[in-house]
Image (cartoon, rainbow, N blue to C red; front, side, top):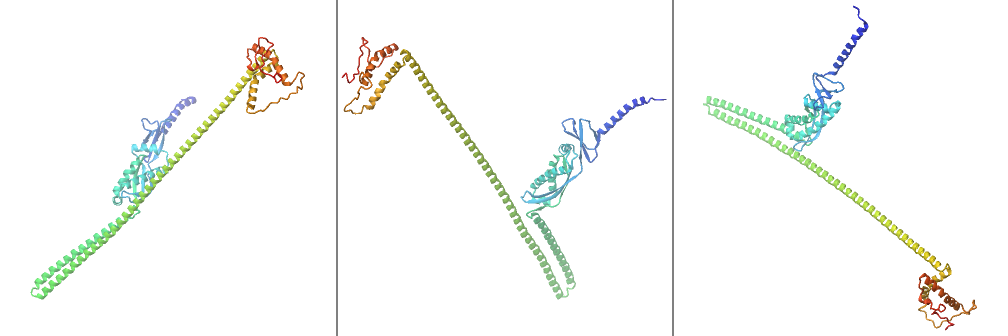
Amino acid sequence: MYLDPSFMVFLGIPALILLAAIIFIANQYKRCPSNKIIVVYGKTGGNSTAKCVHGGGTFIIPLIQDYGILSLEPLATDIDLKGALSKGNIRVAVPSTFTFAISTNEKIMINAAERLLGLSKNDIIAQASDIILGQLRLAIATLTIEEINQDREKFLEQININVNTELNKIGLEIINVNIKDITDESGYIDAIGKKMAAEAINKAKVEVAQQEKLGAVGEAEANKEKEVQVAEQSAQTEIGRTNAEKEQRIQTANLEAQAVEGENIAKANIADYNATLAVKEANALKLGEVAKANAQRDVLIAQKEQVEAKLKRDELARQEVEKLKIQVEADAEAERQRRIALGEADAIKAKYFAEAEGIRAVLEAKAQGYEELVKISNNKPEIATSFLMIEKIENIVAHQVEAIKNIKFDKITVWDGGAGSEKGSTTANFMRDLIKSLPAMHDLAGQAGVELPQILGKVAANEDVVSDPVKTKEDK
């Protein structure tokens, strides 16, 4: 049967698509080795920020999810702890090696996924080392030096409790703790070791002495029994029996003396050890008290420095406030003085403007009055000038009188030769002309409604007759 090639191509396209889909789905299924953890993040469902898979596999939804790998490989860090303060205020050095790894506990794995994913091995070791160092100090602070040195099981248990609790928070757990050595700065642990060694030696010596004593007593008893048997068999010889008893007593006394000597030696050794131990304990107590005193001194110095720093900070703050206050007051005073100066300047300006306006008003009023006076004088300025002179005559005369009132005159001589006028003297002519002009002046003043001074007289009913209060020398 013949198949069209185009038909074969048509049948092959869906197969290729299906094959590609199968390959894509297969690639999205991730299998997890036993020594790793797959962390799926993105949209994982529920309130969890990630999903951890240890063993088996999981499907990664494209575009919605992604994944990362956490290794379960054990990590180790050396903790060179020095100067840690124990419960008895004795500083110890505890160099140790901690082996840890990411936990496979489901809750702790989530912590590792949230805090360690993407970090390098060195970064994880650095974080763990910081936590271990702090918690190891805390564990040492809860135990005495004897518990740390002798009860290692309790010490390790306390370390596991403190360190593991904090490591679990970042997803790690302890696998092994190896304490290399425990030493202290004061030599207390060394003294404890020597004490235990001395106790063991003294105990062995006492046991040896006791065994020797028991052997000597047993030997004495055996000899005694032997001698008794010999004595019983040689009862016939008194001297032999007496000698045997004497030897027996001597031998027994020697054995007892040796036993007493051994006990005395053991007691002396014990007393010597006790004295040495007391000296070491006194030295350790002294070192502890000195360390405690130094610590208290450091605390007092730190508190003093803190108080001094606070006082300096408060003083600087107070000085800054005072400086700002002075500056504000100075600015306020300057502003006040400026405003006062502006006010005074404005007042002076207003005063001068007012005076100028007053002078202007007076001048305008005078000008208007002069204009009216000229009009009243029938536009004859010389008559208006006479009116103005008349107004000033009284003041002029008053000033002249004031100037000469205190001068005593014996006589007054008037020199007037009549020069410059055919009609007579200048004074006479002036008075005559003035009297002639009075009627016209009174007439103009009457028209203007002005009353002339009494010194100028008044016009009688007969206009030709004018009272003249002024008399010339010739009239007299």
